[in-house]
Each structure stands twice: as C-alpha cells, then as structure tokens.
Image (cartoon, rainbow, N blue to C red; front, top):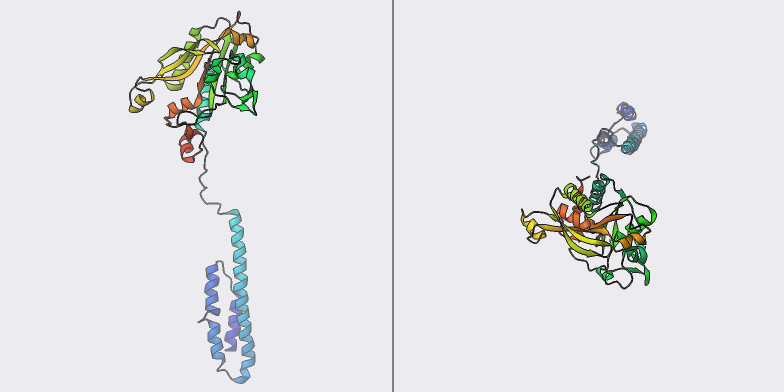
Length: 339
Ligand code: DAH
C-alpha cells in the first residue's frame, strides 16, 4: 500500500491541467467525498500498527500535494483568463457601431445653404444677443413704430436696448455695415420670440435670411431666385407672390408655393387651397440701405427670410414643432439615413 501511495504522490506532482474543468475532475478524484484519499484513509485504519507511521506520513503528503495542486492550478488558470479578457477574443466579430444622426434642423439648414451656395451666396452670421439698432431701428423700425408689436421681444435684464434677436434680419444690417456691394449672403441662425408654445409656434426657432445688393437689382431677380430655390428645395416650380408689409422692404411680398392637393395631408396643411406660405421677401427699403451706409441711389437689392422649422415640417411631414426640441431618440433616429 505504501508503494501505491508513493506512486500516487508522483502522479499528483506531475499532474497538469489546461482548464478549470480538468482541475475539478482531479479534485474530485483525489479529494472528493468518494475520492481516493477517503478510500485510502479508510484502508489505513486496518493497517498493522508498525506500518502506520510511514503510511500515515505518506498519506498526509499525498493529501497536501493534491490540495496544493488544486490551489496552484486554479490560481494560474485564473491569471490566464484575466490576461485573455484584457485583450479579448481577437477573432470575435466587432460590435455594431452606434452611429449618430444629424438633427433635422441642421439637415434642412445645410440643404438651404447648399442651394444658395450654388448661385453665389456666402454664409454670414451675427450675434443672438442684439442691440435695438440692428434688430429694429436700422431695419426701418424706429422706437414706437407699431410694427415692433409684430414680434414679441425678450429683453435682457430690463435694458430696452439689449435683446434676444427676434429675426435674422439683424444680420443684414451687420453685413452691410461691414461689406460694400455686390452682396450675396444668407444668414442662418436662432431667433427668439416671447410667444406661447404650441404645435405651430415656439419661443426659440431658426430662420435663414437672404440679402442681395448690387446695381440694377429688380423684383424680377428676386422672383427668379425664389423660383430656383423652391425647385431645388421642394421640387415644386409654381410659386405666387402675395403683396404684404414688412418695414424693411418696399414693396414686400409673401411667397407661397403650390404644394398640390393629392393627399389628405395636402388638404390639411394647405387648408384646402393647395398653396403654402414659405417666406417673406421684398426689395430692401432705401432707408435700410442708408442706415447701413450704402448709397440707395446707386444700389438696390432684395431680401427674404424663412423659418427653418416650417420648411423641415413640410419636408419631413412633422406635425408638431415641439418635436424638434424634445431630443427624443426615437424621433431623431429617423433622420439617420439623411446626410
Ligand atoms: N424678418 C421677417 C420675420 O421674421 C422675415 C422677413 C420678411 C425677412 C421679409 C426679410 C424680408 O428679409 O424681406 O418675419
């Protein structure tokens, strides 16, 4: 029996394993409830007294060797494993990359910029916190002019001179102050109005302003540019200009496009007329040119302004303006495929 135990000690010392399962099988074989050591210790009771000392020592050595082996192998396999997870499985297929999407306001803004870039308009920007001069007075809206009420204004800290711009027309004035004609520029940006929030209106929204100043610019030039824009943007080539009033243009007009009456939605959004208003425009009032130090005898020009949200709502059939600002991922993810 002593020889057998010595042989087992040799086996245990020589044992190696490459998985934790192999170590467990080994542990059960030697140290388990019905394992070899249990068996051997049971036999040990019946051994002659003079053999007991050597055999007892050998059995203890065997047990210690088996226990030591299990601890050693488990520890080294654990180490291996943590090394593996550090690098990961390099053959594993990669995780799908979660791509973001552009906000529909940015998409439409970029589209408008692109359309006007093609016919020579550059992009200009101005501050969102404006002074009275650029937002109102220079645009032919002196103080107490009744048309100021057309746009409810947010003032900054009770100072009637500093406000959040109510329209991007303020950038017209800034651009003319800095640049001499010929001028062709569009100015996209955020505007603010003290209005109740509803499905159709918000107190913060976006506009694009357009300005074209040169010698001999006529209303026909304006109309042709608008026609080009509506064709490129909406694929619609029927527009009409309705006489209107803006203090900074004379004459002024509102631009409608013929949207059609093909679907129920067309009926609803055009109120059964087939026509949709998309922007305001007109010939820059000579007073505005004068205010920005441009000679109104030598130069004339046109201007227009449109709301980006309104155009995005039409293009993507978005029923409620508030959806643009809620940042609901389910809404935003629908624009993933649009570049
Ligand atoms: N500023 C106007 C608004 O916010 C829009 C506008 C109308 C801009 C006519 C213009 C224009 O440049 O000529 O309602």
